[in-house]
Image 1 (cartoon, helix red, strand yellow):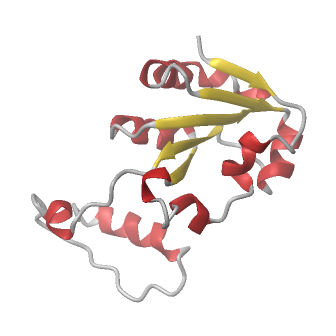
Image 2 (spheres, helix red, strand yellow; image 1 turned 90 degrees about the horizontal axis):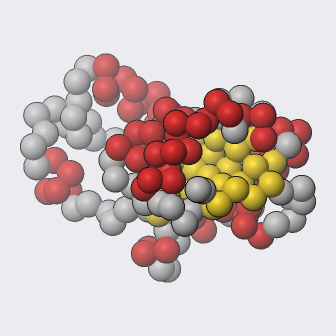
Length: 152
């Protein structure tokens, strides 16, 4: 059985990874082996699990627990010691700064960075991003690249 922790306090240090750490801290440039990334929504978390990413912990609103049963079972199988944190929805929104309407946030260990040769080894169509000034555009660029069949 997964390790379910019903939390009431937003001050719990185990929640830092979900709301109080900057992207630079999550990437952990000084200690890359300790790097973390956050996946949002059951679909994205499932894709990360499919890719073999290692789960650190899961955070959800208490009202989403029942609808996440199959995802929680997958996480339990992949990482039986990973804690699952549940907060009342209103507190979760205060922690993250936005309503978590699509289920959950999951902290994963950041994988080893690929070399360019490894990343493009079997690719036929490669998208190269250079001098991106607004990182919020990257998602739209990735979706557009996927639409035209880019595989790296």
